[in-house]
Length: 195
View 1 (cartoon, helix red, strand yellow):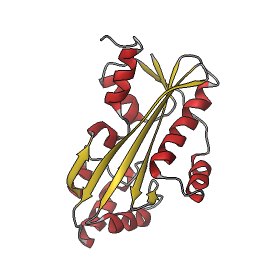
View 2 (view 1 turned 180 degrees about the horizontal axis):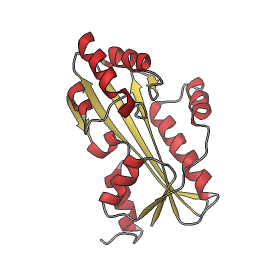
View 3 (view 1 turned 90 degrees about the horizontal axis):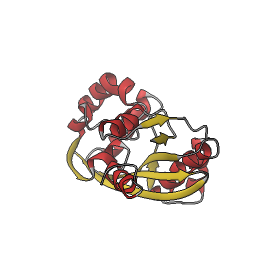
View 4 (view 1 turned 90 degrees about the vertical axis):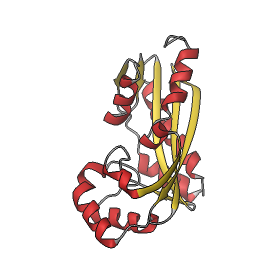
């Protein structure tokens, strides 16, 4: 059994589909404040993802016993970090910037047990976005905003977001927001899953 320090349906479903018993316990942390502080310190996107995942796991682990998983994902575009789009205009602007370019998705996972950090991993995927026409962006934003507004970068590659890309390099699960294979390896070593 693992406790996911989040309400993320996607992350919970990925763990369940892989045969992991999971329950959720949302972490009440001020993600935007942590992110803004780290950006002000010129922290790298990888470190921002790791710190956010750690903050979530630590918060929940201070309240419950057992394995607690915190996770977060950060998009890095040439040193600029992107957050979840706050409006349709914000999504359109992000897609215009990313169009025809590469960006990296960092997916961090941190596992705590009884208040102590036990394990951490940050996966990365390189995303090559095709050149998008203004018409395509407008149509995509109108059709997809509601579904993708809670996703960094404003896309789900398992859905219509696949149309945005010409190439993806890296772990599929990390693109979805959780370095699942690495987490499964850790749980096997700990005896939580069969070898």
